[in-house]
Image 1: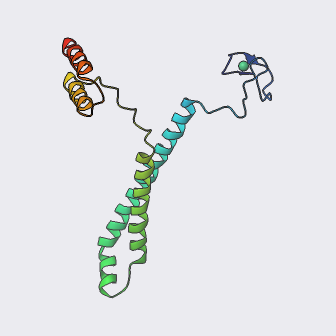
Image 2 (image 1 turned 90 degrees about the vertical axis):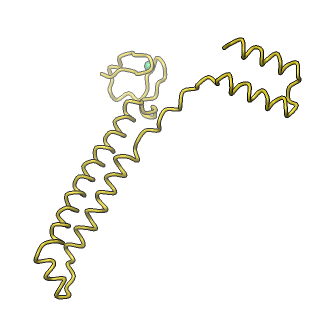
Image 3 (image 1 turned 180 degrees about the vertical axis):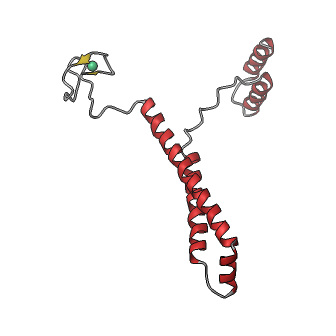
Length: 150
Ligand SMILES: [Zn+2]
């Protein structure tokens, strides 16, 4: 049993691909905003996990790099491949995790429309008049209206 999200009618047959009364298409239905939110959250969560692991690997690599054994090896002219690998891998993991965690931020809501201040409106009015887009009479009328609204 499932419910049609469009008309809220219960549909007994789960294998139905569309709602008979209203024609709602279950297969090609646009994803709901709730599902989108979950996608964003899961990307952020995996980003935090990857970033955390990357950070740990980076710390581990740094500890190894500073260890006596690694320093001795480098002084003897050997490269500490594992240390470099840990530092590089950890750094990439950390950056990748940070990217996933923050790049998936939902677009910030558009700034609310703030009504223009009287000063701004008069300035705009001045501009319109100096460009001869409105007549002097219209200008005076509009300016009076703006001042009256203060
Ligand atoms: Zn329906």
